[in-house]
Structure formats: C-alpha cells, structure tokens
Image (cartoon, rainbow, N blue to C red; front, side):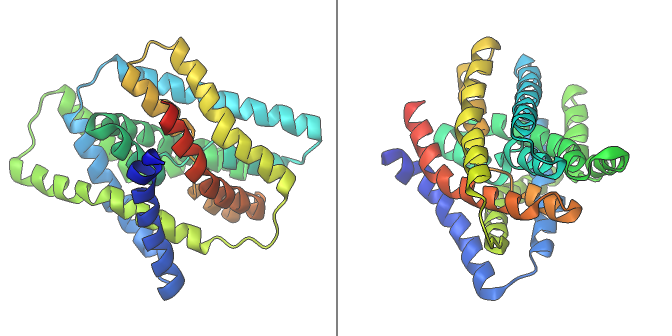
Length: 297
C-alpha cells in the first residue's frame, strides 16, 4: 500500500486531471498531443542525451528492447496459428501487447520509484521504444509494402529522433551548448513529463469501447502485464546490466499497452475496438500490477 500511495497514486492523479478536463471540455487532443510530441518530448530527450554518460549500458538497452519485441511478436504469432485468428486480429494483438506505454506512464513511475538516475535510463528506453513503435507498430497496423514505407516515413518525422541524434553528436564531440539556450531547453524539458501524463489521461477519456472480447482481452492483458515483465526478468538475468537499469527495464516492460497503438489501429483498421479495449483494461489493471511489482523489486 505504501508503494501505491507514494509512487503510483501521484501518477494516477495526474492522469485523472487530463481525463477529467477532456470529459468536461472536450478539447482538441490532437493540438495538445502535437505540443507534447514536437516541443516537450524532444527537449526532454535532448537534455537527457546531452548530459548522459554514454557507456555499454545503452547498448544493453538496445539489445533488451530488440529481444523483448521479438519474443512478444513470436508469442502472438504462435497464438494466432494455434487459435486460427485472422491477420487483422494478429495485428491488433501485436499492437496492444508488443508496445508498452514507457513514455507518459512508465517514465513518471520510474522517476517516483528510482529517482533521477533511474529516470535517465527510462528516457533512453522510451526514445528507443518510440522509434520501434513508430516503425514496427505502423508496419503491423498497415502490413505489406505500403506499411513498411509509411513506417519509415513515420520514424523520420519524429522530432525526438533528431533531438537524440543532435544531442548525442554534441555529447560525443564534447561541443558545449550556450548556457542561455540550454537553460531554455531544460525549462521546457521540465514540463515534458507532466505534459505527456495529461495527454495520456485525455487519450483514455477518448477511448470508446462498445463491446469487449473478454477472451482476447484477458490473453493480451496477461501477456502485457505479467508475461512481459517475466521475460524482461530473464533477459536482464542473462544480459550484463547494472542492477538499477535491470529494475528500470523490468518495470518498463510491465507497463500497459501504449495509447498510440489505438490511433494506429483506427487509422489502418486493425481491429481498433479490440486494441482500444486492451489499452483501457491494461491501463486500469496496471494500477494493481505495477504496485505489486514495485513492492517486490
């Protein structure tokens, strides 16, 4: 209960602010989300990578993310074959189970639980996850050759990608930023986490679920909230990672389905109702599962 009150509850309260204002005022969520994507998040990413002490831990994050994604996709493909699901159901399952909400949910949880050092790892992981989700997420939503093309374009449109590249270049080449410019970036970066948390609350308020396919939702929720962190536990046991990074990766892997995948499912008609149901149910259940996981680790 202490973990819930000190770590999870503050995050949930911020989500509720976004949820409540969206239900009340019916704001244009696209405008708010655009500010978060194109201004707040890139500044946070730039500040994190500019100040980061780059070492082998970042390579381990890449290996971990690739292995986790491959295993989750494989599990879904095996399930699809065994159950005889259609390609659209398979795509919906992959969208809602292989891509976790490591940004506007995972990052603040890790900040409250593990402090600034853990948060730095979390931001690095969320940038990588954003790239993976914008590529593979779009691909599995659209499928085929057009899916690959759209996926590549999606990654190149991400401002956080360029923020990471520029910050890494300045970091590696030891090029100092003018203090006044970096202060402006830091000021905006400080608003990033509460900003994206409010956006998630607004996104959840916009999810409309008419009917829930409980069999598929139960399977997907178990895979996202229970099996995924167990896979992460095995991976961090195999990989030579710092104990704090291991905890960050396990908690990140236990996050609910990313709300962004619902937008992909709607745009490319990959069972949007199913993906929306899983996103909503995993987000609600994660209040219990994340609190339990943090208590143990």
